[in-house]
Length: 325
Image (tube, rainbow, N blue to C red; front, top):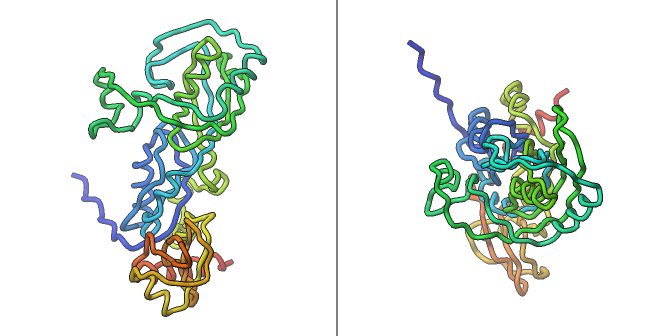
């Protein structure tokens, strides 16, 4: 009889972990693994990656979860490979082949297709997706053989580079890199490109290489995280305000910091701004977000006093770990 698994003592952890999600895990499974390794009390992610996809998955812990929605709206960049000539039931390699066509694609066709897919467009969400309908994920309907009505989404492809390639089995394929708005389904984009080329296609590989200002080179794998000490794992966390890149900043003295943190508006000679990160000046600490209108600093999402204090302590400990030889 197996001994019961030791219960992990949870603790307050605040910050952002840039995870390189492995293939085969859902985003939530990857999150739960990282949460367990960090012994964190509270965690969330900033946008789902399919189990067959790898790449940049920012994970938010503690106070950072208050600002995760801001990163859900960020633009994303993906690398993908699509097998030409075969259309599958799921749009990727997991599905059954439902159509097969000959492949005759020229560079001129490829250049024309790229031009057609850059810019704003409507995209129909695939049935095999986590999008919910009446509280139930679309893939659950799909697995039951039920097709439900969906509404097309407005998305934008900002950049698209497509190259002819061959898979290891010499099967014709394309590789492409797409920078796109939130809510873009890359499987659908791969299928649509295949249809535009006249031969159909399905995705065989997908990797997110950038989300907002975060890139794959900044990420850490679960294997690397497992091999670290507890202190080293905490030192991998970016501060909470890493999610607030591009925000204007306002720094308040101790008296105004306390009032702002209690939800009170402050007045000053600040220019109007829709997105503001607000800090205390001594010691330097993030208090929350706000917007400024007519010289008035209006609180948005605020940290609690205890979150401010815990974040300060954690950052100081991280600096000590980083300074060790």
